[in-house]
Every structure is written in C-alpha cells, then in structure tokens.
Image (cartoon, rainbow, N blue to C red):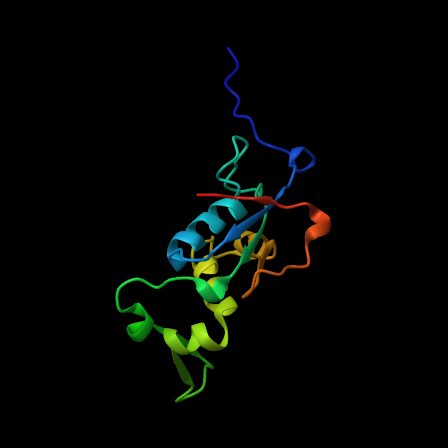
Length: 144
C-alpha cells in the first residue's frame, strides 16, 4: 500500500479564464466565488500551499448590490501611518466613484494574507462596465 500524498507540480497546472457577471448579485457572494476560483478550490488538484487557481474577470461592478443598510453604514478605512492619517470612505461614495476598488478589496480580504494570496490577486481583473480587454484568452462564463 502506498502511503504518500500526491502533490501537484507547477508544470501540471492548467489555468483557465472565467468571467463573472456581478449584475444584481450581492458584493460578498461575487467576491467569495471569485476568491474560490482564484485559489483553485473548484479543482480536484487543489493544494493549499501552491497557487492552482484560474484567472477571473469580474464585469459590471457598478451594478453590484449591498444588502441591508450597508450602502450607508459600511466604511472603508485605511491609515497612512501618521498621526491623524486615518481616511474613511462610506460605501455609497466608493460605489459611485470607484466600484472596482470595492470589489478588489472584498476579494483581497477572502484570499490568504501572505505572498501566495498576493500572487492569486494578480490573476483578478475587475471592470465597472461590461467591456473587457481579455477576449484573446477565450474566457468562459461562470454561473453560480
């Protein structure tokens, strides 16, 4: 009996391109599915210490939903590191001015917080509208 665990090699990983249409879907649901695809958890060869994920294109971020009263109550915060350097943006303003950033932050928070997560995040493309520049990669539509 063989007691060794199979570990995927980088040469065996085949990456696909997927499109997720965010129109009318909650922000968190879209981000969760994108993070799953980026990490490769939908594949049988998934290995947690190797990036086995695919490329993801998220379209129509401007039409994503925030449930409840999050549109008025949710705050995006970051700090410059200096005294008094905290910046706060309400979700309503973020969705009007930069919906791509809101989606990118949601997906980033669901990936590992290390160099592997940064590598996975590079495979994400986010667009506010329905146009994208990755037709040459022949992306498939991912429904969930």
